Image (cartoon, rainbow, N blue to C red; front, side):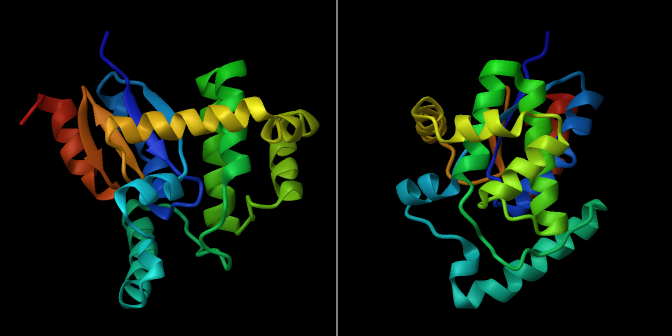
Length: 201
């Protein structure tokens, strides 16, 4: 059986959202599955001594333009959120609660719904009430989700996920591993597909 593709994303990353809309279909075309990993870019940026491109005045306007253009190129809807970036600790903790208690498919569904909510409707995933509404809409018990994202167990689980990602060499999002080969960025889709189609190059 072919190894799954590891997909690292942040709920506040536009490129993660765009990649989340193509990675499953691409993987399926080549008989692969996708293993999703919610991380916090802030943790990776700190270790890599990086900052979000929108925090640099010279890069900000270009980055905002490129988010929209990249979404159009992939044919996915995109609305630049008024508040950006936002803290996504609670959404990411909820992901790991679902992943470890209900399985990867449920966690991936939560990830897709959260990314779409933020980047197509401007739903602020940093606000508990918005998260609870989103959870309920996805058939998740909102009260249990709130309990989970406030629970020390899932805070620790997210920290472990961040630490493991950094140890593996993840420094941004989206980040992919295909057969152990690292690929960083939504713009690595063509390289990932070539690897899946014909192997290492």
